Length: 528
Image: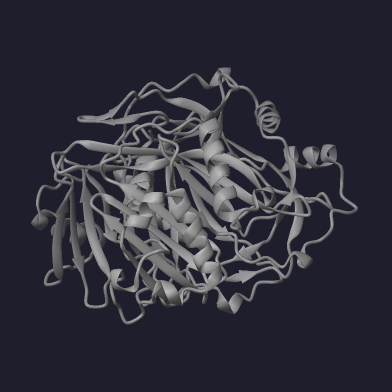
């Protein structure tokens, strides 16, 4: 499992296992804990009761567990819903149901049960479809898009890792028999025993009259040609692909040379690729690394480092120190009265991984408008970070993301300003970036000041021979063959703004963002 996957898994796990909630219908009023916003079973609207009955039919033991019910209003979606919860011993079950009876969320957790291996795709598809049919009843209005790995990892008090794995089945709604891709989806998580552990319903009410009819479309063959021209195939080295975390650092290090894909959807009427909301800027620059190593072992040393490296004074601020309790990796953190956070993060050996202002998106701190160009900011950051690069580094790839022109349906006045530029400086070999050997810097575009820096610990492995790679066009064709284009609807949106109507596009329907093409073997590989 990759380091990034472990981190996202732990974050996902902490969200999934936050205080639980859920349902029941045949409980008496006396069994319900009273709250100011609490309601009784008798007060539930008919559609909500009907959905609760279906959940109990799926999990019959809920009928014997006292329920807690609250009526709430979602502050983001401005919709009313009922939150229901069951708790008995180690079993915690929760659900959220809209006033129209729509099952918005369902979560089931039992600390006595283990799910260390994900179920097969076939079992996951079978159980997710059965639950959809039993609880929603209109399974023919959805299509399975893909099934991906899900789960999380937690570290127990004794330092042992506890892994919970499941398969996440992604369902897309159908309009005119065509799937609607994007945020309108349902995710059903199935554990090792074939039980539904999570249900996330993002399929909001759709005005199907707004969807264009599938008329005057280009052929799939024409779309494929446009797709192959537009797809971005980036050749990179990756030392961490497939590596696992061991007691003394990364294990099973087996560097790969791979093509990372950034695919573009093809508009199904015009055949034009749909542009991104941003533009990726990359260029290669010569540099002489100075091999400065930062290492600290105490809060006092962390405080001095912030002052010396970035001119940040934290003396007198609210301080806290946090370690993982297992390997003694540390986070030294200082917070101002307006909640601006400064910190230094280290490995268990005291090697500094990150330092500076962690509140780089603090609206108060960075409310001034930018006066320094992105190009100038990137050049200044390179001059600053070169001291931390190994002495053998003679060139780096500079990369940052700039904003493209907004679509005409976007009200730019409603888009929050972002006055902080994130720039990456990636070590190169034979003109190819090594993705895990990168320093990142956050720059305030109003002042030009470096606000935060993240460093890397080189693995120094033997990288593959790039002379034996397949070319870009071959890799793109392999990718398209494994992920054929499918006609689908998309409804473009940006934050809380949405285009006036959906559009028809050709694009892969699978979860292709986590895959790459092995540049030596030509195989399509799923990142773990």
